[in-house]
Length: 144
Image 1 (cartoon, rainbow, N blue to C red):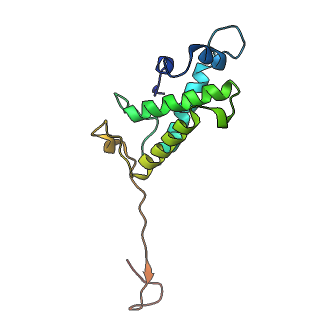
Image 2: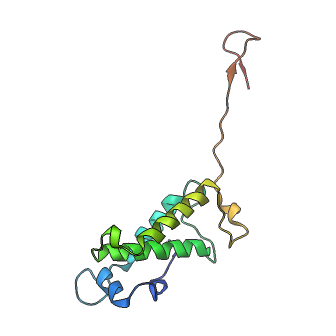
């Protein structure tokens, strides 16, 4: 699975002691839950984009909006893991804003501007055929 973010992307975004508190599941002062958080964030981004793009995304470099969304979602999750309620989570609003942007990208209302060839990764849209019974011929004949 490609990495949409690295642990170092959180540097300067939330206090270092919060990162350790959030990601140290066995209270030994060592970060041991980063992989689970990273995978949960990447899975959320993939779920938001999978109807329009082939996921996981394999762009190189990764579009900045994907990295920024991943950082916001990871920071929000770190505060949640520390026991911070959503109403007090300083990253909740930013994470929700990026969720809306990802939805807009999926709907085609917004593009990932940092890559000119993102359309190459777009999944073929589904097609449909509408038929109507013909009044010109025998019953059961269709006009397309």
